[in-house]
Amino acid sequence: MNEPQNFTLDPSLFMQLQEEERQRLAHALMQGPGQVLANALTEIEYALPLLEKNPQVAIAGLKALRVELRDGLAQLKHYVAELQPPLLQEMGLGPSIYQYVHNFAERTGMSADCIGCATFHERYPVTIELALFRILQEALTNVEHHSQATHVRVELAQLPAQVLLTIQDDGRGFAVRTQGLPKKRQLGLIAMRDRAELLGGQMQLFSEEGRGVRLIATIPYHGNSNEGVKQGGQTDERTNLNHTNSERTKGQEVQRKSNSTPRRSNRV
Image 1 (cartoon, helix red, strand yellow):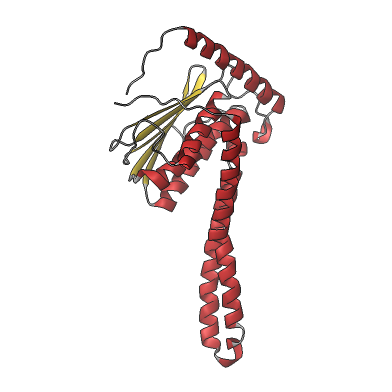
Image 2 (cartoon, one colour; image 1 turned 30 degrees about the horizontal axis):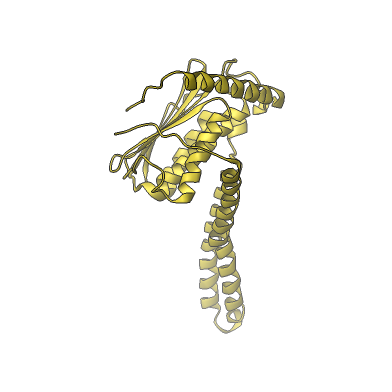
């Protein structure tokens, strides 16, 4: 049975998530670019004495080192792009997600579709665009490391008064309860949900073993889609702050109302 999952977040877990994210990045830098630089130093120290004694061997080693350094530079660019999406501020949500999904498919060898991304030209406050982009990043990280999927489908859509992001894979899925999940993965799911709810939205997760995972994130927005965006892709921070506060208040009001009425189970 597929049911939307509810996750809870407390400040200690959120702080733990931040710390684990820093540790993950530090580990990735050491295992990626850090290891490449360490190997480069070893290769140079080995090649220097050979420049006079056996220059052909030294040249071959330096050429191999050049390839390794290029790979290390590519990895470093990837990590920087993860921290600060280069297209998001300038081009907006649609082109950024399209490019990210394209790069994800090339890097992992997994087939991927991005429905509605190339034609999604609306601009929203940076709080909305960044929240949805971070949810996408975390979701695709889960797909890459946990799903054993061969295909992932991303869909971005503008609905009346809200923006919708769907990520679905054909992987192994998992049981509907989070207790059996690795702790880091639980925190990742909680963080995605929290990003949406802080803006008055919601995140729903549908999964069962052997049937893949479907994640749906919706964030409301009641202004004009391009307001708060200035020339050159820059956003008005006052508009962003006002939107965040107003949508959070609306979300809390909706939550209070929903708590006072019987709930029906959403099923896919």
